[in-house]
Length: 110
Image: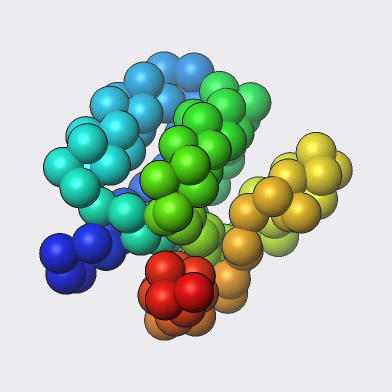
């Protein structure tokens, strides 16, 4: 997107088997200096606790570096996972990529 913003789009099931690849990609983006990250889950059909752990680790790391992470989530079943776990209070969850990008941009300008 730009020097500090990156979007990662996930599709299908993001679970125990694919989460390590997602983690490697996400940490690589952060290590490359991107401090504003949007994870687009609008094409994901399933996420599990491993995926949630990757996201929690990333948001903690980004926040400690004055960065931000936002999610795009349009699937009710995935949104429900965040609500049930209380992680909807941790993550900025948006219905569109544009809203998520605006969210991380605003958080970085404070």
